[in-house]
Length: 327
Image (cartoon, rainbow, N blue to C red):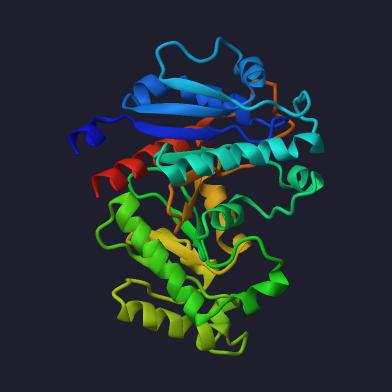
């Protein structure tokens, strides 16, 4: 027990789309590792020559516990220029990190952004990190949550993720919402150290359905789900109109907001936290965090990309891993 407690936290970082900013953001973030995360060691998964070229300095950084796990590119990568030949390379980095986390080699994984189109163009159906992590870990339900930073950060979780808007209503169910709330409640306790999480829940329709005049999902699905969740001891009030919920007077006592679909909650969160926010996948048997932005192809290789979100994602991964180990 004492040996396990003394072992440094092992954090894996996938460097994502090689034509994007992931490789350079990883290097920039890890230059702060000695001061910010002295009790962690990092394994960076990616092509060694690519990482050295994009780091802008000697790599790894002297005095930092960083190992590069070399995974060769299929073809040379140019900043800002996507190449489907490297789609399977990107997926291979993610597979290696997942396998390492499931086996216990890694305490958490941090993922740099990838380009979904590149993987699909490589002949692999791919919706996104969240869905792929669920499939690879055989997890029936996961929850995407984005979060800001600070003493009481804004956190927004999603009842549905990457769906066309026309399919959202059919994807909502009483059982599904109860399971989603249970996952959020459990992981906020287990990985974030919150003793009694308070989760505010939005409606689906404008004005939360206006008593059925603007839709019945609040009456037929969301309210029954919240009643069942509260009977299980989950503090989940709602449903609230999404257009007025995101105000300080409502959020000041909240630990998370559960929004019904992707673009209902995330524009607000990204407006408030972009560049410093993170993406967390709840409900997995492993810990995974990520940046809150995409591959930024226009910034790749320019040295102008901001590593703030990557730093925050590593911060969160280390913190969550500590809570898990202490449990």
